[in-house]
Image (cartoon, rainbow, N blue to C red; front, side):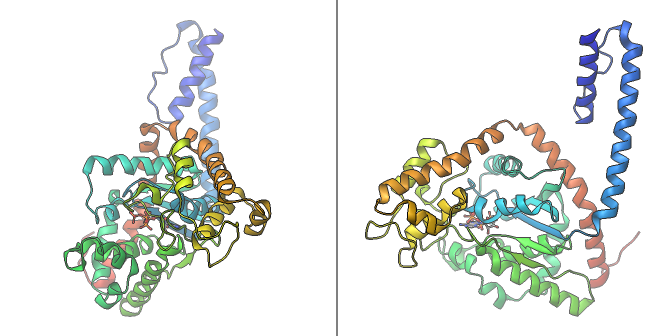
Length: 390
Ligand code: AQP
């Protein structure tokens, strides 16, 4: 009898989480009792959903909306985490949050279709393992909401070539192929990013410092569209976390840490194993001299101290004091352990997430944001003069 009830409650919970379970897999003797318990739980559950909906309706208007995303263009690194995702986790309680896996951005560089699919799911898992809570935030895949591409086209018609010519990220990335052979998609990437942001009436965009210029373009396009066609878009603010603003490459402190950097010694990846992390930190370039000092004259060491500070919570001054009289060897060994202390539990959470769990979250997220995107796009179409048949 006790076992039957346990199965029933288990089945009920599984049903609530959308997993299909046969509720009648239970012995006949206790069916009556079980159905009674089941009905009671259903009523309780409905009551809670109702209360939750009412509460969110009341509080919805108080919260500003944030939007941000990461492109599945390679293996995520601690720069992506410290510059963006860590910030999102902290902001999701205060803001109505929308986080996207921007797969349409990822195809602006050559990519392998199977790998792109794998990395897209991996990034969504990383969001969840890092602490993005799907009950508080909407998580979805960019290509699942076609309005991103539609709005981009409209914004393309008001963006200027002179504006895109100024984008430093394009200049950096086009270096590989040369400007003339670079793809139009890569050049136009900031306009797609503007569409991502403006589509959701985003008020705040939490990104790493490297993306500031792109958010500024989104602001300019919003203002231009509004003055040309009437108030349509909210002009978004950029939100950059002070510490860990721009994590630099371990192999070159002049350039940011990047997924697409050729050498794996440029970055610590979020899914690197313990030995790889130790090795990469050991090999990280340092400046001349052997003292552990935080100074602009020692950019490589400054970058490593910033990383230490972001993970350990200690200030650069405290770190300097701890390693006074010690050398790079001691500092680097400690830095590796500080990173590992964060990454190990993170990786454990990551590996406990199944693809099915993540796909369900992404589907729910898509359903939530699609309505906002469609409403905004309908408004845009009306403003620019497209014929709409209801
Ligand atoms: N080095 C970094 N330091 C701080 N923040 C960073 N971000 C990226 N690199 C650093 C932030 O991570 C978020 C997601 O970035 P993205 O994937 O959309 O594109 P990205 O900025 O071009 O990142 P990568 O790692 O350099 O990727 P690739 O090499 O593919 O271009 C953004 O908020 C970004 O600011």
